[in-house]
Length: 257
Image (cartoon, rainbow, N blue to C red; front, side, top):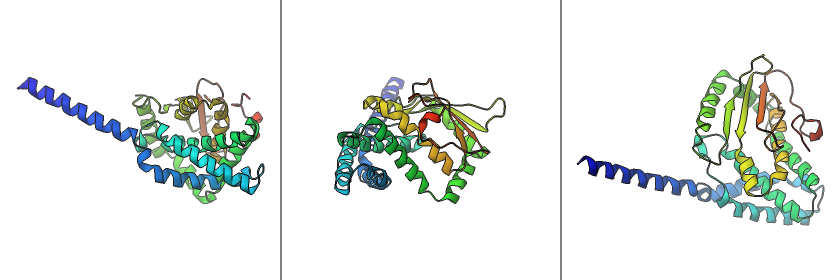
């Protein structure tokens, strides 16, 4: 009887794992319409910087090309926990940008021109957030309740439930030079860009953190990133002070060229 029960239990576990695997595999394709709508919204922030290099007809062609690339990319996005762990929206946004990058490559822009265009897209994206809302988001982010919740999530990422996900470690300040820190030991975007043979563009994607935290009124600084060849990404946040602009990047400690 015990043996039959064990076999039944093992069979149930196998069935559940198979079902979960199928759900994870289809996580992005099941919401394709929503993701494509999100791409259209994101591209609106890209039109103005792209028009600095191309005319209207060329920009329309780039838009269509990028849309097709992103649509093909959706099934290739790795499942990294969905809503259970942080980072899925970052991964999706980075995939949208990679689709635009590939279209700009095909249109003949250089890597540096693409990098600056990507930064302007990200800057436009965060500047569309109302200033008061950005400040509210910044206060929430540096609240003790948020930091406590974030610590718990960081500890969970260290279990590495999903191989392509972020792995983050809490980094408390020992000298009071910042209020909250986290070290990203493994980056989902880094892994995805590596799989797509696009690591040369990752340092420009990382620059998006600067306009984001500027909009939130949070002082943010970083001395290294995985995208720039560092051992980790050392995020440091403070309630006082101002975040640098991310462009030109040569003035940033993290930038390696």
